[in-house]
Length: 208
Image (tube, rainbow, N blue to C red):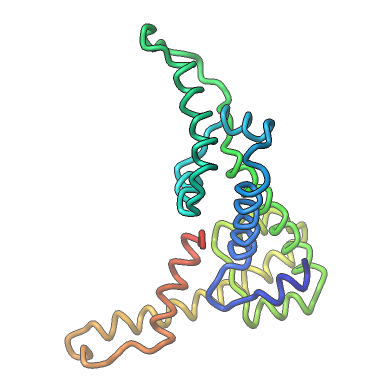
């Protein structure tokens, strides 16, 4: 995992998002081609449902038979639990079942943020590589910081990320300056175009 992280560092892409999305894509592929008939997994999906994000992701992969199997279960389960003759009553709030795919995604995030926190604290080469060409979104940064036990390492990571944010802010200011009527003839540089994408990446992360 150490080399997988270093080799996938990119200046404008959160490393945790990238690896998590890669792992999730494989999980979706494995699910569609190997696990869609797994009774225990189908039972968990039937009880927990599928969240809107992962439902659309699954739909985009276009496996018609898999959808027929999964959604038959979900629709039959809905009918069995919502009889037309029975008016809905208020119920005590109970723990809701979790989307299987959300649960898996959370597990991947936990694995990669733990690995990142360990490597950043214990491996100078990893720290140097991330400082030079790595990136991380704010949500995963928070998860990593919670897992880092060394205050010194926490401060070092925040310092590295803060420097990267300062560079983004510099280019965003340049974009705003170029929209002043006096500078409207100036075109955006590649660095400025990348900066606003990086700003979105930091704030929102990536699902691609």
